[in-house]
Image 1 (tube, helix red, strand yellow):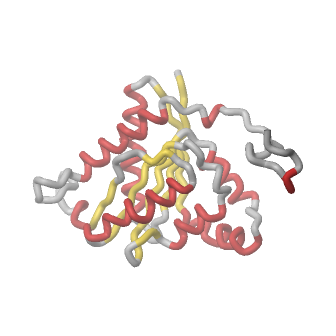
Image 2 (cartoon, one colour):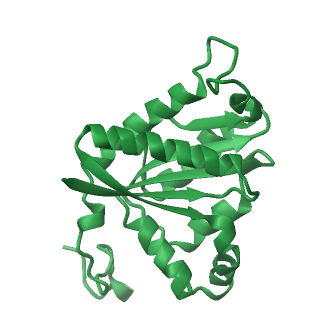
Length: 213
């Protein structure tokens, strides 16, 4: 049976956390979709709050300690990534942004990513499109079309949905996004790709050593 690896990054600060809850629901739905395709999934989940000091030390020194380095390797080599953040002051949390600042800006190239966010009010949902999506686009990741936002009221009913019939319920949005992510993960070979630790980037050309052809 084919296996894929799915990395889940949650930037929730509290315990329990609605951000972690949303991340888990997205992961569960994606795993189910992959199982329908005959694919088993290894899920690795990281709560950034547990790595906050490691991330800040990396930001200050430029080096990741072994614990953080192991996490970064797991996230960047996964066949798919689910990244969920709480929204503070109309944007992603500082901890969420700092983590993606310390990883190599080429390490997520072509990686399928599903983005999600949580906040107290639906008014912050636009942050997914004007903050998170541009950041992952800059990192050359492949962000699935459907992003998932959960406000406090989305958790308040039995089906996790809003009373406004014009808005998809939270479970429907989760299922749609999971389907889009799983379709990309099926075709990924990131977790099985052999990496050369001494490989240089394709555009490496120190001081113009090699003239253009």
